[in-house]
Amino acid sequence: MLVRDQVELVTLAPCPLDGDLSSGPQLTSHPGSSSGGYAHSIFIKAAKELFNQEIDDLQWKILRNNDFREVILEVNGETVLCFALAYGFRNIQNLVQKLKRGKSPYHYIEVMACPSGCLNGGAQVRAESGTSSKELVAKLEEVYQSLPASRPHDDQRVLSCYSEWLGSHDSEKAHQVLHAKYKAVEKNVNALGIKW
Image 1 (tube, rainbow, N blue to C red):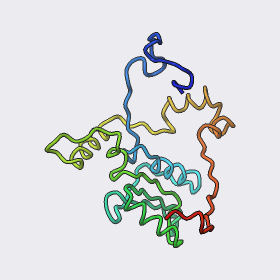
Image 2: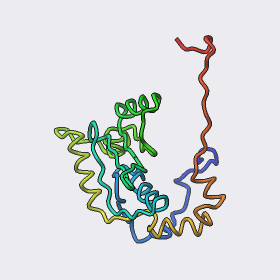
Image 3: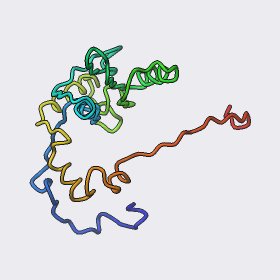
Image 4: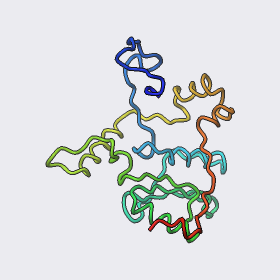
């Protein structure tokens, strides 16, 4: 956008930050994944709204490895919600195979390409020589968990964003800005379209 609008940052006059940022950054964590996903919050909200179940803390069950976890909600002995976290391509590929075979029990799946999620992403700080990336990810996880927690649906910044900018959580503007639209991509069955 800067190139398109021919804006050069060095020519702009500095201005003070507005809102909560003017007193310095306020880093917070949110319950669940340190990778920025919201499966944890969505599960709690779905349990409340769909099944009138108040849940404060989720117990994610580790499946094949630490990057593939699930959580379920049972009501009267029946599984009514089943969510998963799948981080790293190996876990994603296994999950996609299950989906293709119609064998996936999940209602919601949080997928991140990087093993260990975004804390191990390509844009993150690299481990110093002599230390492993697993050690760095563990340290980042520890630091993240030490931050004050803020639930998205209780965060005053989120609430003011909806009321002041979007109008409401269900407004047309909220749907345009925050909701994704998908369309089915049909397979090319034309033999001439195959790339060898």
